[in-house]
Image (cartoon, rainbow, N blue to C red; front, top):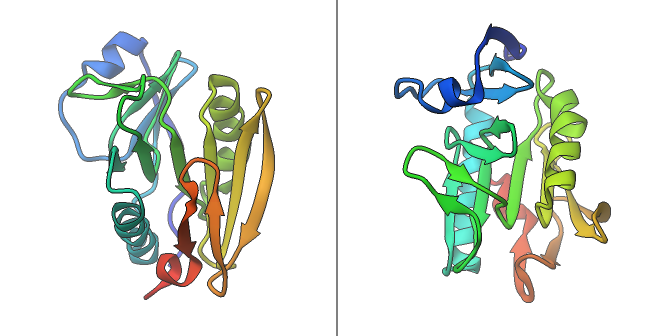
Length: 184
């Protein structure tokens, strides 16, 4: 079953958005508009949990979070599928949301979100200074790792279930198993 597409549903100020009533509905804020996101598929959620488990096993320090946890980057608020904040990071937990730059952001693309993940979010994460951005294609079983170098993302590598890889954000001594990320 194909998920519904993202939909711009309301306009409000950033302050109104950050002070909205508690909800578990996936929604983001961009350029004065509230964007309702499609509900994730079970495959999507399996990969989210796998990544969280892999990060817990690989880097026990710091904190990892999954959507729907808000991350405020300037005037935009996103709910990355998974993000990690290293110990001592400048990314501040405000209780209802985070302000600032996670050290790693992971987005799991779907047919309805891929364009925003590759354009608007890519540009926002890059210009805000998020150190590492992973784009995961669950259908193609591909993990694209982008690292920030001199203010611009460079593709660090493209990995699949057969690969074991390291990344700058996690460290050369912290191998990641592609098979663990894509496990059913």
